[in-house]
Image (tube, rainbow, N blue to C red; front, side, top):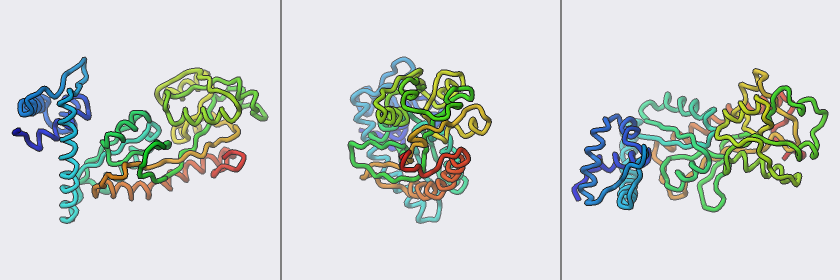
Length: 319
């Protein structure tokens, strides 16, 4: 076969994005240029590598084989490129981070600070539901994965890097905001606004309710933290959500943090990767940067909890 590393890198990007247009934008090339390279790669393989279904590009079996080969070739070359650059005293290379949905409230700032310190490194951040992030972890598409509930059914490199307190929120006029105490009977009769199945926050809420012998009764099921907040503000019920996601609304008085047993929930951020993944210099630099940044973010959350008379770390009653 007569194929080039350039063609393999293009094919890998197209396969990961599922779109020639998105891949062209990421690679700073034109879609016609990508189409020509993909056609030449298919001709070299002697088989079609993909088909277009609706607006989505879908790999054939031969395409999946080519994708695995492209990944196998690209990763050591990318490491070599960065290692040689590091020996020259030049910082460059590519960094790919994936985080669960709540990461959208702080990871862009963290990554922006990193880029200002390392302007020669190209960086991308994917914000995904937990199930989609685990799929990317399984395929090894990124340098680091940030989540609160790493899969427990496999061996992973897993480092706790910060706190992610879960709090219960309500609209300011919700009856629970005026209740002198919130007992099990109230909890058992309450409907919750929840994220999709498989969400880390939803899993924790289900486990918390089980302590009272109660099953989760979703009032609404929504696909984003922003939708959750709007539903609670609109009077659709209560929600369990990361404190990262509601700091502005709490400060503005648009939402209220409730004093409920077992809250704030002691949840933590974990930086995760497969144990056999060799880190590039860019990935190692980001790891060190994140460890330096998280204590400042943690302190902001702890101060917010203390201002609301909710201690952190949680007491024995809450843990």
